[in-house]
Image 1 (spheres, helix red, strand yellow):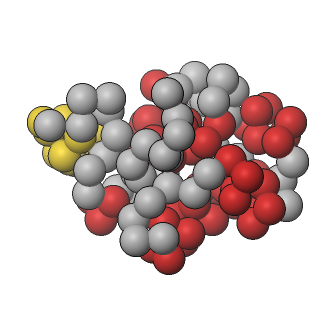
Image 2: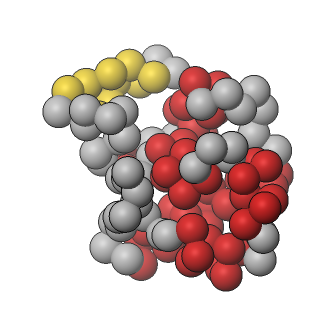
Length: 106
């Protein structure tokens, strides 16, 4: 593990770049990570998913929700999630939301 400065804030990250302390996260950090992931601007639809995932992680003891939990909980279909967060939406949204890597993601 190490540290990294994102949007002017030094945060703890693991070897894959996931924040290890969700309390260090803020929306500016999310926007910067999103840009790194190829998402230029976070829309209301993005924030709906991000906010849901952060809320669920609090309920799940810090664990990121699975893709299925996200689709059921937000009402956003899998195809739309792939449009919002291309190439691995559960993993990308977890990283942008300042959460750990979802279980089962490679």
